Image (cartoon, rainbow, N blue to C red; front, side, top):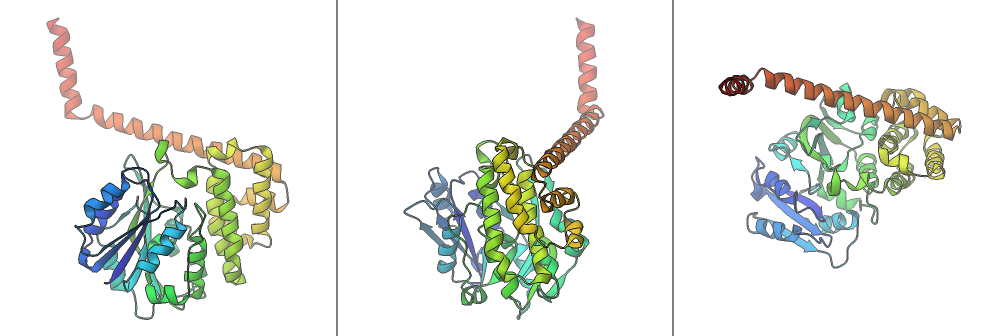
Length: 370
């Protein structure tokens, strides 16, 4: 077996089929994959969908928990123990892989590499796509063969981490790397931290291997978009759990990683629903993260958030909350403007189409007949 793909699943009946299809369609051939699914007591038809694929894959392992864990940490840990491949890949069951993902990663990974990493693109339910800010930076559009965190410390700022990595299983198991359990988000921060800080060599290719589904509407809203306060507290906990592994020259890049997660939630409408006391407590906790930060590095990656960071550092928490609300309003109207612009372009294009011209002729003819 070449690659073990570990999938923690819970109530993903609408998505798990697409995810498994993207694995079936891998250019290296599905016989080189071992699919390891760990079901966290799904209450919908997830299991029925999974069972349909049991005989389709050559190598298929299905494990069902007896008690719901409510977070992906333990299912992933169980999946890693069940995996028998040379490499291991942790994937989320509502996401997709590029057809050539594994072929490309295997082509570039070196014998001395502990893991190899690619890029991610996000897509919405309406089919629109966007690239995460991490991968817009010029440094992340270059190839790095057999590097490490000492040589390229900026990799610690990559917010979306573990799902982008094809990991050598021997390295993973020998270092006793495990996911934090009982955390609905942020559980992979420590795993990502250990991968970077314990690895002597890893490679990175600027090729989009992973397609992240942004489930942000209705009942399908992602866990990190629900329970906003708990999600932020998990990010804060993940920082304090992981920071000891970083040296001074890399810690600021990891701080950027954590702060990106936090500010994404602070600039979300859900943050406005918190009490003033809760908001203030979040800002105080962020103060413990940014103490002694390097403003040069922060300004490189958190330019728009830098005024909030300065206010928090000066313990002007109420002003930081007010500025956050202002930034949220600006972002809201910015995206509203993009939406209106897209609708205008769509309407203009439609009015130039043959179908619209035929409709106008037909409509005029109908009026003339009447």
